[in-house]
Image (tube, rainbow, N blue to C red):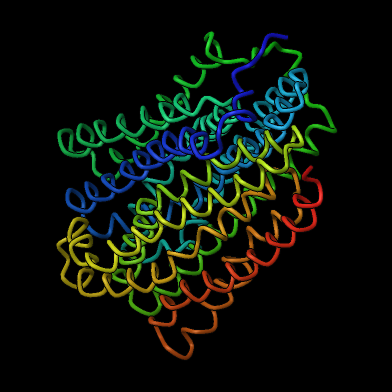
Length: 450
């Protein structure tokens, strides 16, 4: 087999390698987040603040189905990175083929289910009162394109696992830019309202998939599939599922969180509170893009070197990633503490929303400087194929701490109890993750060095 470019993951200096992996990932996440952010600004200004709340109701449902693709992608890409590190291209190809088949089977099934029970799902996720009708319009159209989004998310992680972060970045840039252009055309020029916003989003998914298909058919990809690779293999499916379940469980908990948050906030403050949460949620996606970029860049480096048994490089990758991510998270924290009202005004002119959102934003981001430890720690266990600790640490923040907090604290403190649950969950989950990561470094990586 010819020497593959992914081998640089095991040879280049960690700092430079992490920057090379993280910068394209960060740019891709930035543009994708900007897409969501600007999309929300367009919707809020051209359709109305209720439309922002409607999209916020639909997102957890569509993203959960799309997360099937991401979970299969990340689970399989962990295997691919380690297979390439062990010079096993045959296994890498078989895993990729199984990822495609699994993604199609699962997401199409879920979309059919989602369309059948549309009138029950939307109210369950907070689509009540004036929010219901615009949410239903958006939901139906977006759901048609979710399998395409799932395939795109899966393919993007495989591109990164090959050590091709720039192409992974392009795969995120193309649909983001396309969506913004189509937003302007469908919403502003053609005046299609919520349907226009939905068709712009769905069309952008197809643009993304078209680029990803081109990449894997081109000379740039090392993974050249044939039909034999698409047949499901029990052992490979099991391995993909065990690791991918970590990502799926995380997204499931995110969707459950949206369900609770939208309903609790609707009961406490009506559409205004749901809209405030929608704006804060967009900032959670957008503002932390460099931190998520470092986490994405960390995964293939840690996985490849673990597969190659270069444990000293794995250890150095952990510490470098945490230091980079923590520095970036601190900058984000400072900016959001200073400018929350100006940020809110970008989304809406609704005086009630502007009055409520800045305080909520400050609480939600209060513990941001320390989240790098939790993100990198959970990502490490997933990168090296340790599914159980990866799952538990991934669920720690939202599953074990945040959801119980938002069910308990509002009973005593009202709406402020919802917002203070965010930093409390961040602190507790970081402490737990730091303990397990330190133990892993001491018992596994230090022991095997030399």
